[in-house]
Length: 136
Image 1 (cartoon, rainbow, N blue to C red):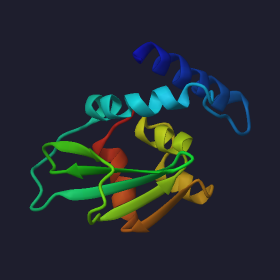
Image 2: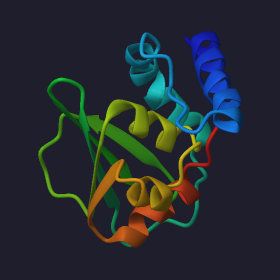
Image 3: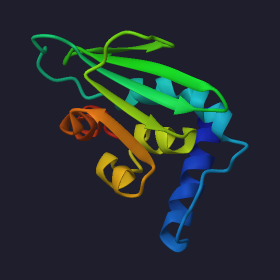
Image 4: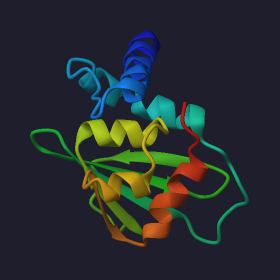
């Protein structure tokens, strides 16, 4: 899985430098979605423990809606797939945008400006996500 991730993401990196609208290889996206929790674990930057955890809900459209909650306590985090609970911020996007956000290739503000990401709630939390999870 890590080899596929390396090839797919670095292929996108090269395309980003030379193409106006680069995309991940569509065949790699399902495998990359499975690997995303591993990326998050490898890129998480712990900080001071928060008074109450922050909950990020990603709503990713993959033919059907897929929800993932990331609960960040400051010094730790956990992923809860399919959760319906409350969230401090909701981020709605397609699978490619989710993957590019998670691996640090696409800034949240840029994704919003391009219409690739819809943020419901505190937009600063969306931007702070990438400070807590430094891309690969």
